[in-house]
Length: 130
Image (cartoon, rainbow, N blue to C red):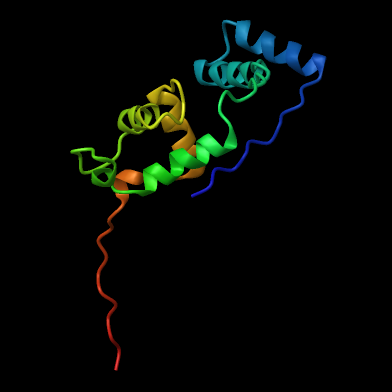
């Protein structure tokens, strides 16, 4: 189920000050103070950090995906399913990249929504309706 993006909350300075007073007041019920602090803190979010340029070319990433779509025994690996570590090792073994971390391989696989460990699926046969 897709996540719904939260609606940005715009607080004016007087509203922010009023919420700060509600938080600091000793007579405020704890539940209301917690909710007020959540509203105030929600506006204090780190700015998104820019990503640096990719160290790998698009061709190298496509080669990673091609390896991930093959069964591991075709590459001489004695395993049944690919892992991020095995994919990283295989890319270095084939000379596609000089070095790559398994974590980055996992990120690339997640971004492409590739799941090489689920190469074979089990499915019920369709019910014939007569």
